[in-house]
Image (cartoon, rainbow, N blue to C red):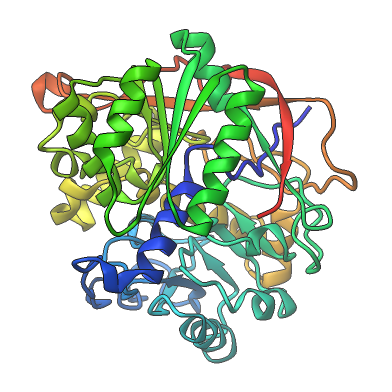
Length: 450
């Protein structure tokens, strides 16, 4: 049985998206969620060098670089994909043809996103979009209508669960026909994340912390649903977004003897909660964060609360970007060091996912021979054969199931844990699964409405 890929509430993109949307919608209540960053690092790639005699293959990358949330929030996949294409061009390109990358900053707005996709498709004539990460993917319907494959995108909204020709990085089993999302507006989460912590760490008591905001509360309810399905005792805590009383949450967790902490908050909320936990002398066995926070920046984000930092765990359907014993991860790290040496302190899992998306496009385009077209690339993406991006991903595909999943699902995951003692005391993410493709569980699929 193929593993289910539409698991929004597993501790990865969905929670980070929620945090971003919360920050954007309530920007006036904060001290500023970020600053603007120009696209100076992402100009169109030159076509000189090997293969320049043949016309380049045009691809596009849409990113919310200058969104109101902050310049580095969405740029990870962009950096990873650009590093891949720069290394690819330096080694001769695809079947002797260079790849020309057109980038577009949609500013984090729906109007900007629509402008980007029109520019890339109608004017730049890209054969595919790659490694997209947009706050508001309003141009998705147009991309799908033009049958331009969008490969390896980060699922921030629900568009990758709805439209054909859109292929998110982890694959999907949903009937994406452009109508309702999923199966008549219903998506499914599987519970392997919660099963892992119950089975491997013996945890049985969990707490879910959310803001008193609709999206936050909705996602927190999905987390609680999954935890309860796995037999956890669940404490649900809600705090005011503007004036959160994390001291009260810490007291509740202490009284409840909570072991596993999950949340539906942004970085500001998480660091505030960690400070309150430290002040109250409360510790947890695991604080599960999301893929967007799977980065080197946790050193600074949690600098004041090292105890909380050392309780951070992350899960994914991809390799840990620290694990250079795998050739594809080593190639990613070498290219990032070569082309973006100033980003070593910001390296992240999202950058590795951008690299994987670019690899996926490259393998699709390579199958086309000298005639790389959108339809040929799209046909590769729709193959029944699962894809791993050269062993970076748990096998993923886009074969739709006509009916919703029933019964137990076979689901695998990778797991990493931050440890200050790793890398000779430098600190880092330590993989906790000897083989992510064998770290699998038979778990239920739970319905929810996004």
